[in-house]
Image (cartoon, rainbow, N blue to C red; front, side, top):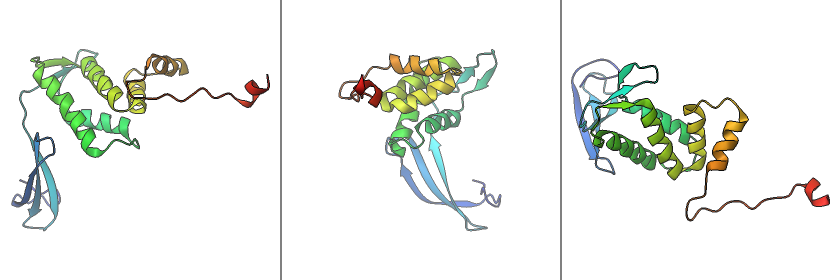
Length: 167
C-alpha cells in the first residue's frame, strides 16, 4: 500500500485487529522509506450501491459521507466513538441487505434519522434540521412536538417562570 506521507509504495503491516463489531479490520502500517505510521481499515463490501439524488443524478454510495453526517450530528454528545461506528455499520448493512442496488438519498436520510432518534434526541434534531432544510423556528417546534419519550426516558417537569408564579 502506498504511504500517504511520502508516496512510497513499500509499507509493512505491524498490527492487525478486528473491530469490535467484527465487520472491519484495522491495520497499523509503517512506511519503509519515511518510517511514518498510519492506519488503514478494510471492510467487506457486499455490493456496489448507487444513490439517486433528489435531482435525479446517480452517484456511487459513499460510506464516509454517511459517517461524517452522523458524526457531525453526534458532535459533543455523550455517545462513544464505538457506538457511532456501530450505528454507521448498521445503516450500511441495512442498505446492503435491502437487495436494492439503487437507493434514494431520501431513503438513506430517513434511515439515518430513525437510527439517530433511538441513540440521541439532540443528534436527531440536528440531523433533521439539515436533512429537511429547516428555515423557520416552527420547523424545530414541530419536530420537537412530534418526539415522544422512549420507554425509560424521562422528561423535565414544567418550570414556571417568575411572572407565572406571581399571577
